[in-house]
Length: 246
Image (tube, rainbow, N blue to C red):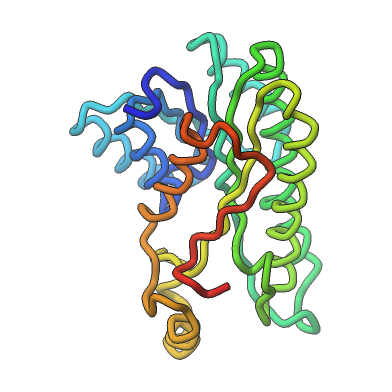
């Protein structure tokens, strides 16, 4: 029970990596609030699984690109539980295209989803963490933000921004005993990967050391480590979980 009685907010918490993080945290004793914005079916499926396992997991519908909605969500969670120990910023959007063909919307939507949401959620949550002088923030980045990927200038730029944001915020919050780290997944089983061209997936797998696609739970285990007391002397770091692509 690495997170016994901890209160954790997980954005994008009902599908893929976010779902695995939500369930993994709850299985380790945390009281989890999984944030979603549109996919009600995925949210209901998550609640059903959590209920069947008797896990302490709740849902909250929030558009994390709107600060007032984020602020209200954080206030409600804090008023209900009296604390917020962990924030996982997992919301992310992908709209791949070569730069010469990329629309303004392809660029602006990713900045809003991948960076603005991070800014809003951290800003709201640290106002609750700083007075308590404790907390863990884990931001989900990507190996694309480290090595770059053709057709992903928008995605790579925002995920590289997540890494830089993490380093800077860690310096700001260190004096308050608040740890800020990031996890950068590689190719992970998901709806997005299932829609990728087969030859592209095979090329990425071939370039990795382990020669396979990762599972959401394998990313969730890394996030769990950074959220637990086992990582109390680690901050400002990006943990790469990619099977050896980088």
